[in-house]
Length: 118
Image (cartoon, rainbow, N blue to C red; front, side, top):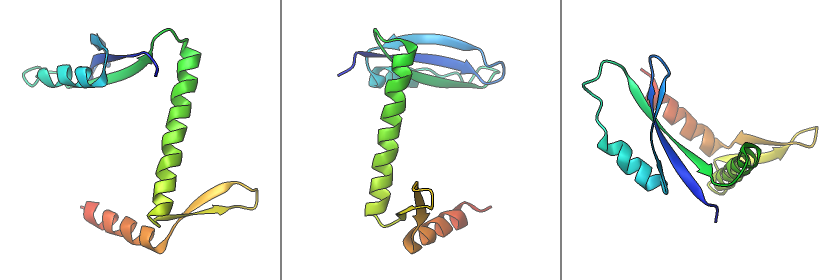
């Protein structure tokens, strides 16, 4: 398991200035702190950002770790979509994997598009 900390930042959406709110040992603690904050009375629009950082690692090592983690998550999502028969995996003429919606996937996409049209 990696030693990680979570930075909670408040971001001014108008000026793009950031304010570090705190550093937490878990994402749950950072989320809990974020939920206690109420800036509705302020004139500017704000958002929050929680950034996971691995302790005792260089930026390059962290980037590599999170890129691999992201790639693994995408792979798992694609596998699930194939199991659910929403997409098919094909190989193109260059030998690369490509993905295509199945008929079931097309129906789901059409329904979502219809539900979000204004």
